[in-house]
Length: 271
Image 1 (spheres, rainbow, N blue to C red):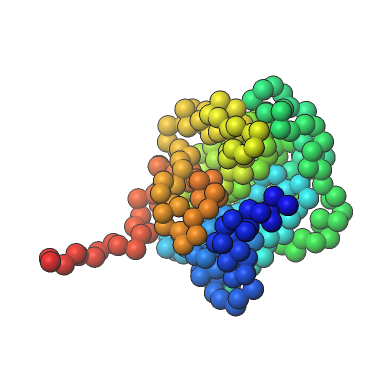
Image 2: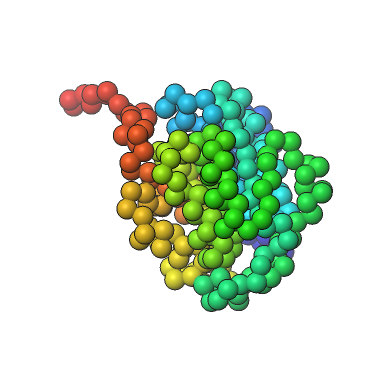
């Protein structure tokens, strides 16, 4: 009932859902939020555009917190469309414990919201649905270092964090700490699922994902995770996910200062 009333009160939400059924290029779909998981669509599309501007042919995208797998399935579909349109090869990785959430460690894991066993996975059913994504199961404190040390993934361009806990997100953010810049695009699009407040859930900077982001930025001097300020003002249909999109800036990346924007070399006319 809540979702029905929310839709009636937000004509843009209804419009976006109708637009999903209208044939159009992926770029226009991203502009109009005419996709499932529009934050994923935006992050993947922006990452492929950045890679193309830098002359790269391959990137990786990552989802932390696969759970039932709906997001990873959508990610596969979006990557297929982006790869075809932008002529970029995209490798997809999904990280999950595989057995649902572990027990929360302390208040920073917001145990008033989450408990052990939430969001379990039917691994057999999910693997049967996946086409291209690689599922990486286990504790992220183990799987992330192993993933980085393997050195087999193309540069990471987009990451979604939906691990719910501060402790898990803190460990997963180690994905951005390699000294080998070949692991990354210079600017990695990042989506954080659990930073918005709603009824009886009051997010703050001292617990959950927001605390993990804050500590990452305090500890790292050459790379920072920052909100995309003003993103909502660039969107046709501003939405909550606009405030959940961040970028991990790798300031010392050898390609960080390469021109990729649309205004290079232009001269403004004298009025």
